[in-house]
Amino acid sequence: MKTALFWFRRDLRAHDNAGLSAALAAAARVHCVFVFDRTILDQLPDPADRRVDFIWHSVHQLEEQLRALGGSLHVRHAHAEQEIPRLAAELGAEAVFTNRDYEPAAIARDAAVRAQLQANGRGFYDHKDHVIFEREEVLTLAGKPFTVFTPYRNAWIKRLPHATLEPWPVASLAARLADGAPQDMPGLADMGFSTTNLRDVGVQPGTTGAQAALADFLPRMAHYKALRDFPAKKGVSYLSVHQRFGTLSIRELVRHAQADGSEGAQGWLNELVWRDFYFQILSNFPHAVAGSFKREYDAIEWNDRPDLLAAWQEGRTGYPIVDAAMRQLAQTGFMHNRLRMVAASFLVKDLLIDWRLGESWFARCLNDFDLAANNGGWQWAASTGCDAQPYFRIFNPVSQSEKFDGDGRFIRRYIPELAKVPDRWLHAPWTMPPLEQVGHGVRIPGDYPAPVVDHAAARELALTRYKAVRGQTE
Image 1 (cartoon, rainbow, N blue to C red):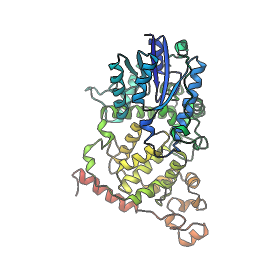
Image 2 (tube, rainbow, N blue to C red; image 1 turned 45 degrees about the horizontal axis):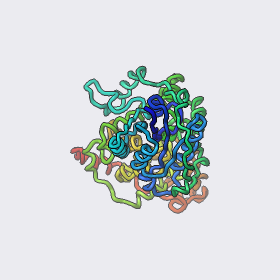
Image 3 (cartoon, helix red, strand yellow; image 1 turned 180 degrees about the horizontal axis):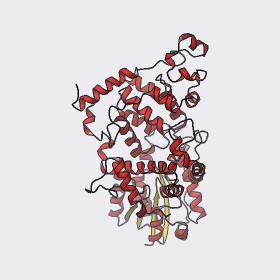
Image 4 (tube, helix red, strand yellow; image 1 turned 60 degrees about the vertical axis):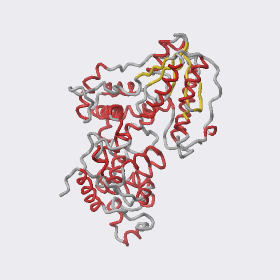
């Protein structure tokens, strides 16, 4: 093959890239392109979207890396479904190479691109790069996709020695990169977006940011399992946004977990397996994107309460751990994993609001939003998904707060109006006597809201509604 086009998407790195390596091995000359896809971007409601900011700077770094290797990068702001076939024809590419995407909208887009290319005598080749095992690579003994995590994990671990974990070669084939002079990269403002507080909240984009974040985590990996549930402690990896946009290779992360070998590293590897698990669920059970994985739960009676939904979104439910989590999300685009579960459980089982409304809010706000993980996590919390928590397991926001933020460091960081409240009252401040409220400078309600619901009563109502769709009403 004389000429090929490689299409970057959620793999924004010029090293250890399966699709790029395949293109370089197959063609004598390889052009590279990234498309700021208007089909996606035009739907985003906020011009200060941190993800677009992250992508823009990561693509800028990618362009510099390709130039250092002797190549270049075409950057377009267009509808990818139209632009990729057009650019392939303009460059005389015999085929387009890319890395596989598992989301239904992306699959439909790629099918349309493939059809257009094939109609003009060009090929379309996609490669596995974003996961270790995909689709139906890990199956039950009966040859079916797993729907329970633990046996999936066991089968995944058993297959790991046979996985491709070594880096895909790029630099050794870099002489084949086309070194044309593409047009200037469109600016954020040109596309209707603006710079955000991304760096102020500790997120450095691109592969340089990814490697810095990885270097910060590796010495902490051994303590991951012990510290991961405490939001005020630096226990988690903070690598999820880099996994989402491919500024890190998943193969590199698994290699590091294996090399460390500690209990903490095994706990972190378990989270990487969860990631693959949710991707294979998305591939094999696409109905879960729009509805409950367990279809009977589509019949749950949800509350239509825009006021309560807004209180949850804005961090004013009256439950400090929930409100602190939601304010962290609003201010930074990040939410600690333990708090994602607590906040989701509260929306679904305390406020009895449809989990899909919470899922869509996270999809709007999270820097690391990934459809597979977001959908899987929300359905887990709502007890509607595969291998979900039982419907009767309902997080108590007060006990979760006391257990995982006992000294209130996290709460006080994001809810300054409670800064002077002693630990004994902080997790349930509405129980504080009026004179104590005056003494500690906070009125409830007033300076901080009273609880929007009573947890005990809400719990009983949730159990009743879940039992009803399960035919278990007593």
